[in-house]
Image (cartoon, rainbow, N blue to C red; front, side, top):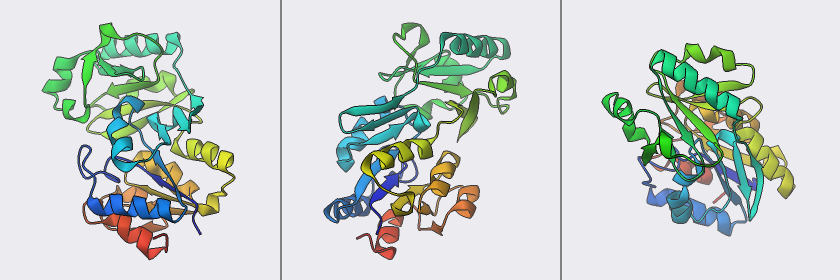
Length: 251
């Protein structure tokens, strides 16, 4: 029996924005009733998941692709970028004409809002603020590089690019992923990986899909993820989460 169910947000829990199908909410409620711990694992920054936590009733989460891990009242892991890395990103982006954003847990601060708007990528960010207004430590770096971001290769030793699509990437610390965050929480709960089921749709869900005892790809998932998954369910809009939970006896 699975004891931990892990859900990506965009394209998995949600259909668009923060819209969650009623059948998905029903599945979450039944999972909890059946003693299954529910967990969110997302590439979103933690300031962008509050509404999802409220709607779903899920308290525990992994944000920024593993840079921030919270269980109960405890922060199990939090990564912040060194100043020299932020400065190197700034220099590369200025030289190559890239737009970039920094998140401090309170908002996303963008270097060139007009450029982002012109390129049509602003719809992927809920609330954007001016980079000059940022204060505090940086938990996530978002890069917009329509040419694939090859100029960030000098950072490859310590980081990798996590693609959003549409030319946008997260700069993810090597050794961190959703899967690592799941392992940290599962270890705290004494849950073996064989008793974990995960649901995802994107390339940043690859590690957790392979890590979980049962990795489920949504019907709307990237083809690469579908090939890696143990099971492909229906789309998020067509009750995919509910159907998979029913199929495997979780509800």
